[in-house]
Image (cartoon, rainbow, N blue to C red; front, side):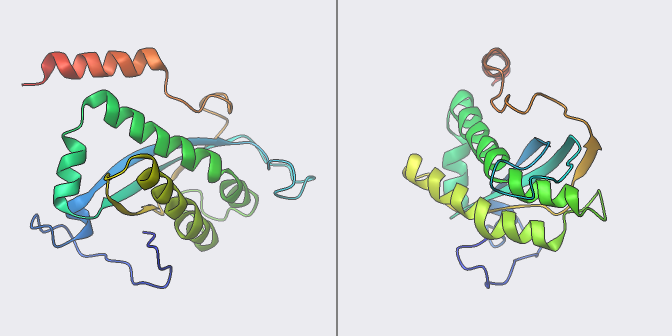
Length: 181
């Protein structure tokens, strides 16, 4: 899990339900990213990177349990937009570390320490900073990726399709509203 201080210890205590643990004030966002080669100028141009889909979890920790509850009280469409923005940022900014992961992969079910350091030390903290600036008062304390991943050959979707389909988002929100007590 990333913090603003990369040398700070990572809290690994299980949730207590009392707000004592970061797990009591966090959400998990599934991210799916297709990597298929380095962007120009960001890696060895001669590297042969096969199309690979990574599925991983982004854990977003709020400052307090109250901030988490405020976030959860937002309308469904607004939460979907925010979570989609976070996932899109991770797909775009995390592309280079994931390409390096494919290039030197020795375990397709776990990210290497170098990839975790890149994603949790630079990409996720920048995402948290941008989200706090874009949504004043949202109160994101930190974010990071879980080291376990699903990795499979091929791309689950075209690389240029990084947004959720708006009809799906609208349908999901309509379904949620229709069944919400």
